[in-house]
Amino acid sequence: MMRFRTRRLAVSALLVTVMLMLGYVESLVPTGIPGVKLGLSNSVLILAIVWLGIPTAFALMAAKVLLSGFLFAGVNAMMYAFAGGLLSMVVMAALYKTRAFSLTPIAMAGAVSHNMGQVGLAMLILQTEKLVYYMAILMLAGLVTGFVTGTVAAILVKRLPRSLLPEDPRKK
Image (cartoon, rainbow, N blue to C red):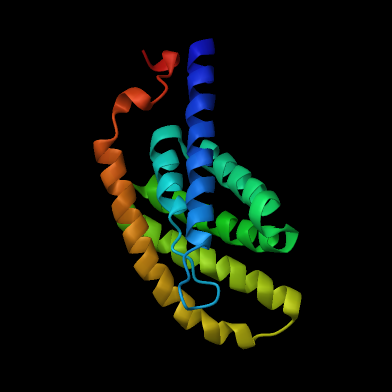
């Protein structure tokens, strides 16, 4: 049981590290549209949902938001990232639990939800409804980036060796 917990913690730490690195790299890539990012770390988050389960994936998302906020962005950006990440995780978790969707549409819904969460918080903080017009651009961008990250996640789930996963001794 102790080896299982240690291995699960090690895999979780590795995934958070990869998400932080990908988040930093994508912050260096200009998209030309304010607020639009590639969302590369979402592939890793989807991998966490499949490999480690939804509760652990939620914890990894929160860790990534906190650490990247402190390291790269600041508290304001952290609030928006958490709002988007929380809504995205709720949507992706719900869709994943249905077993009716493959990882690509789940990632697309997650990306769009992430944008909705961030814009929703911005509308509350700034007390303006005008930001809703920007949602059309962000939703289109979310669909495209979600398609890419979902496809990458599906490839990772198929290609990465299962030996990386911690084995739960209760399931033996």
